[in-house]
Length: 548
Ligand code: F6P
Image 1: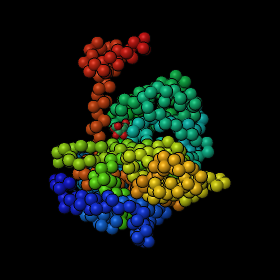
Image 2: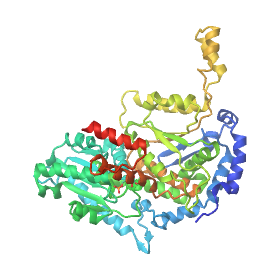
Image 3: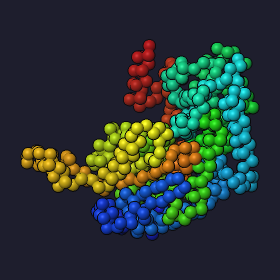
Image 4: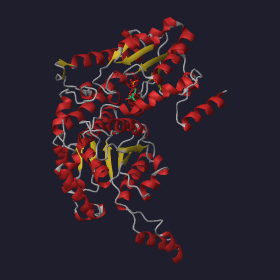
């Protein structure tokens, strides 16, 4: 266990001093002085290319950041994760999403037992079942083909499959439609059930624990809807479960034969590669699902085998730490310029913030430095017309990750070139900015009066020097999607290691859940006890009154 506080390491101290020097340096000057800068700070892996030259760094910054990573024990921790060591120390679990896409099948041991045979068995079962559904061999109770696939899950049991299905929409079988019910809000259920026919619907109940109130409530509602239409016997043909908890699955009324298993070494937010990905396999076909695993595996191999200096997830992670811990910038934004990737930021919010939103280090002490940043994003160019004003001229710096495929799945007219022009323009504009003098000159050229120029020139200026990474893929396909998501998983892992926190538990979601359970009977009038603060207490009373 890494006991030394990271902000007391030699590298951290050096980075603090280095920051004092670099914070005033303009990126545009560094570009002007070094014609090799773009080449120096970019890296390529197969069909993926990362340009990180538009960051407030020089070669010394990267050297010191890598020294910090080494001093934090990163190299040992990477090995420990891949070796199946119980690095999730609070829950005493191994962390082996990498085993789910271990295409070489090299044994990975947990408690002396190779996990690969069970991983492969479930993959084989997923292949058989997804093929049977796609080719109409596994039919509904009345003999009709199952063409509506509904995933009922939340958090990691929803966001990954949802994001991936949307990202790979172009690969969906023509006659299959996928739906996702996650929110406990009855509207989520109602809106899906209104669209589908029980005879042609397969419900996939996805829950690692099979105790999550949202998922079980939604699953019960859907089960009742199906039973009302087709009778109790239909359940076996229309419900499957994805879980680690056989007992609860059985209790719910799903035959364990219709259950696809995974294990406690797979974290919820790291589980789309496991049985949780069943809906992806049904939508795009098992071969494409496997391609996604292969892409993730390529990133795993790169992460495991490459020295830190040339390691994409490590570079991204350490850049994040540079801003978070030295510039005091506790936020970043991910903007895919690809409509199919529009839910990637939402997915990454859970991955990053549930993993690294922690204030206690693994040694049980409070951390004395910032950990996980706030992440937000959306699809470009849409977000250019919502929050980019702040990104360009706000008083807050927001480091950006831009993601762009060179080739679109829908090459219509000049759409894609306009899209690419926009993403490249954003990176350049953020970096270069526009001085007050340049703004004044532009206003002059536009024929404005002297007074107008003097008044408007600051409004029209951009301070620039705002950082961004640009991640280019040849095309988004199952393989490159796998690479992209695995890249962010490892980035989050690296940051957790440096901050010396456990990225794999999520105790922070418990308190709200507990309190909701105590408020529920009060709302339902089954308890007159109101032990809440004045605000919560009167809100309970108000809503009860309004519901009468
Ligand atoms: O939000 C907390 C959480 O435990 C997530 O980590 C998890 O992905 C989600 O709930 C759903 O949990 P389950 O898959 O057990 O239903």
